[in-house]
Length: 395
Image (tube, rainbow, N blue to C red; front, side, top):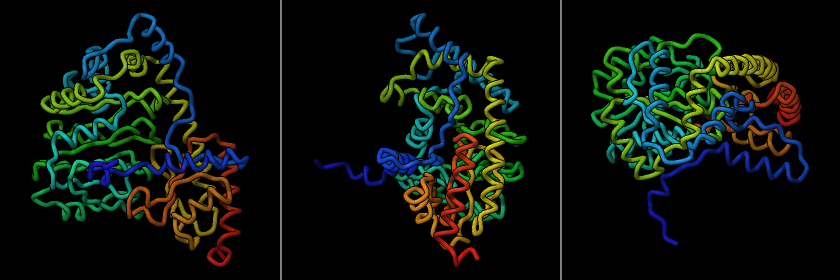
């Protein structure tokens, strides 16, 4: 079979590849602790599930308007307005079966062949994959550990060219757990307006935060009309399998995304959309989120403290998300070798930092989406592995 050349430009997510390898090892009887997949290990809150059951029983099993049910778009708009402190209208909201669609549709709608897209490095690999796929040119901006995995804004400005069309930001960040400071968001907004840039702001981890977040970039003057917000219910409400994402954007772009939905997936499922209203508005949902974030904080504190006790490993305390991104250069192993051997020899599934870009070399990503006992056991296994694998490097 002959395939279109564009398929050669499409990447993948290594988390799913490592998960498959880990499952094969488990099938042979090996014990594996899963710290590779960025999916909350909590059940979806029961009140949200009950809302979905009720919606199905009431007949919400048919097609919906492509951009989403009107009452769901209203609920999302109200939630976003509370977050940003600025008005958001329902016709700026597009509901999609999985938030990756917002990224893909934004690139398809707004970026021409040869246009440049600045994206974070290390960063979520699908940013680069879909940028390449649509024929644009990816321009990675390094995130520096000494800046709390932040950008050097002078370095960012130096990447701008007449071909720069879009900037992708992610705060809180995957894989680092970093948060973009308010001053950097201010500077980025100024540069976006000055150079007529679009900003795609991935805010999927905005509720999994252990402190106060700066105001989102789209709440700044002049930015609502040039920002595309990518968000969804997967991380906040432990709803990854429900496949319900959404975007907030200028009205003209929302109309184009609606057309793309009509031509691709038609619409998101009706009963999952109606469950989203319960997720966004019910007090029980908010209580569940607070409990989940509190548990993630406990896990984070235990994991990072334990990593920093392992010779050759150092780890910043992430401010948000459920990822730790330790520097492992001091072990003398490459991050790829360390990730591969941790799985095969120690039974701990993690991701190599270069899966997220060249600037991720020398790091590994651990998702603290396993229970505290598993995290504690993983730390024992990692420490034992490092001691055995790199005796000279850690003395």
